[in-house]
Image (tube, rainbow, N blue to C red; front, side, top):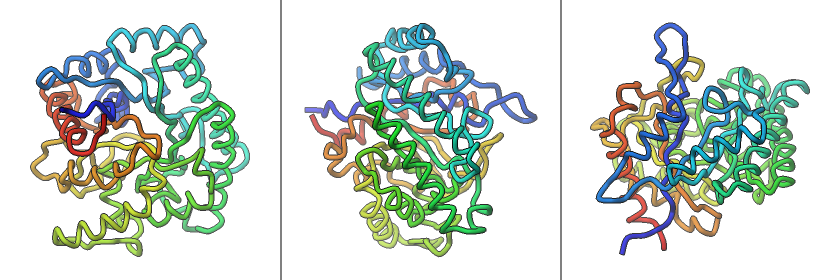
Length: 343
């Protein structure tokens, strides 16, 4: 009998991240279109259960009124979807600013978390949201400034995260810090672990693991001293390194992204030099998605994980708007659930 959990979600932000009006950029894809594409996916009668959602324009004004947010909740629910994890607009150029910046910047970061908590509460009272976390990162792009005083800057990020975690706890929410090589103080598995341990609030702030991003953790792309495998590694070396990484970070993991990576760094627009997301069936993909997912999903229910989400940022619009793309992704998600899920 097929597993019924975790629930399978699609992310809405691939319609936004790396998109824009700049030279060489493609236009964003609307929330309505992303919902339609997600709802149309079907693999032997199985469909996506819900969506994860970035709380920023043009999909959502994070300062929208209660009435406007309820309309959005109605729109999402009309497709039969549940909302899972929300992405707080913590970056410069959205609401927030650097978590290791000055007092003003850190205040903006905390304001973004407050806005996300408010929206989470409205969606929960509406009934469209029943589980999931609020996702953050350090909002300090690149590691050069962090390296000027790594210990002090990690301490500063941790202090901001602790304040953010207190805000989340007051609203009945949990935060998950996304492990991605482009965010200072979170750019390697070791630095990510150091940050989580310095925050030391596991009940309110945990880790969000993405298969594509954490693959580059293994390679030590932005922290060669933390590499667990070298280029040209064998499968045996890969899985030994993978186990080392996941054994350390899995106890903190409260949100999980299914993804593929070809070992390269990629970016578009303002979101540059990050782990390259690839199509689920990319022949150059380095990951056995189903096998690798199992390392992260071990004992998932003990950590409150109720859903998993696909993440494939910075795909061309033609690929995102092709129905076959989403059927392939959904099929991969189903295989992950069949292998590692529960009822």
